[in-house]
Amino acid sequence: MSVINVSESLDVRKAFSNFPSGVAGICAIVDGVPKGLAASSFTVGVSLEPPLVSVAVQNSSTTWPFLREAERIGVSILGAGQELICRQLASKNPDKFDDISYISTDGGAILIPGCSLWLDCSLFAEYPAGDHAVALLEVHGADVHLQESPIIFHDSKFKSLDLAGSR
Ligand SMILES: Cc1cc2nc3c(=O)[nH]c(=O)nc-3n(C[C@H](O)[C@H](O)[C@H](O)COP(=O)(O)O)c2cc1C
Image 1 (cartoon, helix red, strand yellow):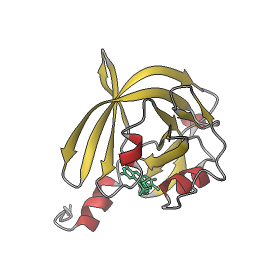
Image 2 (image 1 turned 45 degrees about the horizontal axis):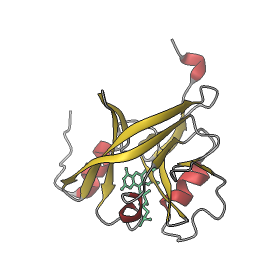
Image 3 (image 1 turned 90 degrees about the vertical axis):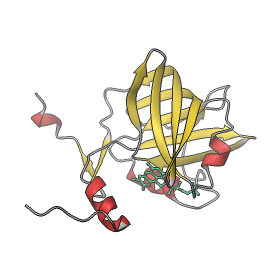
């Protein structure tokens, strides 16, 4: 057995990438402009009462300072086949929503059609965490799309659930 040295960030990233996750589009309309980023650090079940989810955002993000001011923040768990949308949300392009179709609520939360789960959230708390900030989001509404299979992000690659093998 060889334990990799996590003293270099590349090694940490490689080790962490072996944990499979979904990918969330964290998106909202802020001052009339759609803003969003892709996040694989998203987790559900932080708390059930009140319902809380979390996301870790890089301190270098230029989009998060806008999102954190939004009245409501939409979380779209991206579906299989939405890898391009993920890459667009992850880009530094200021017009990243030009080719993304979306629906928004009165509160400004953005829903991306084709996602497997959509949550209508607001910022509950935010904590510094090294080179990231951990944001807790309170969930006010949810829309489950069981027919859409979520993207799996594992080993820095986009993968899909093998539904045929589910038990
Ligand atoms: C699959 C994937 C997962 C990502 N996960 C995160 C994440 O959990 N947290 C984060 O801050 N950025 C994450 N990113 C990067 C952001 O989506 C994005 O690159 C960055 O926020 C865009 O820059 P901006 O915030 O300056 O617009 C991820 C990117 C990809 C492609």
